[in-house]
Amino acid sequence: MSRTAVVTGATGVLGNLVAKTFAGHGYNLALLDKDQGKLDSMVRDLSLPANRLYAQAIDLLDGPATHASAEAVAAKFGGVHGLIHLVGGWTGGRTIPETGAEDFGSMLNQHAWTTFNLFKSFAPHLAASGWGRVVTLSIPLSVHPMPKMGAYAAGKAAQEALVQTMAEEFKGTGVTANIIHVQSIDTRGEGRGTPPEEIVSTIMNLFSDEADNMSGAIIPLY
Image 1: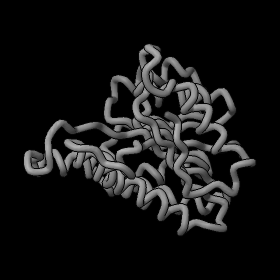
Image 2: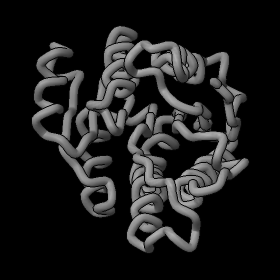
Image 3: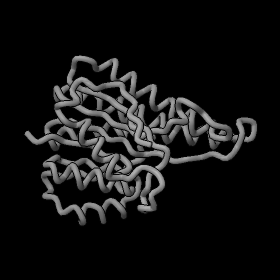
Image 4: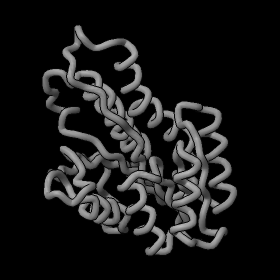
């Protein structure tokens, strides 16, 4: 049976590259994103046969919808073997007293709640497969916060806590969970930030059998 990778935030620059790379390595793909139009365009560009591809426009803050998506992916492909979570956004530029509850809630939603819903829904399928990889992208701010970045750092720190808890809870099951740290992503090839290709190469290494014993790690790429 071919392995199946789930990619969230699939239509972004990094998500696109992840999808193309994993497709080239023979993975089935489940692409999750909020933008139906971009998903449709991405599916056309990938040109994968229908039996290797699942694409869904979804709001990952909707727990029941995320659970239904996990069940659909597992049913179509017979299992789930990877979860690459690339959803996220940024809010900053204000001190804690200046930060509104809406901005703080937005960061928790985008980073913590989406991760919680994904793990709750997909982790049982990863464990059932007997081999699984979870990878998320984060920032050094989660460990060393800076002024006027409290909401963003808090959201990312909560996400990382969930990833590292996953790593502990699934020890011995063949499922690993790791975090990649970047300062920024050089999506325009300007030489500032981490090149997407370097991030994807690291993700592929984490999906190798040689990385079976690496779990709960924070990998700096900056």
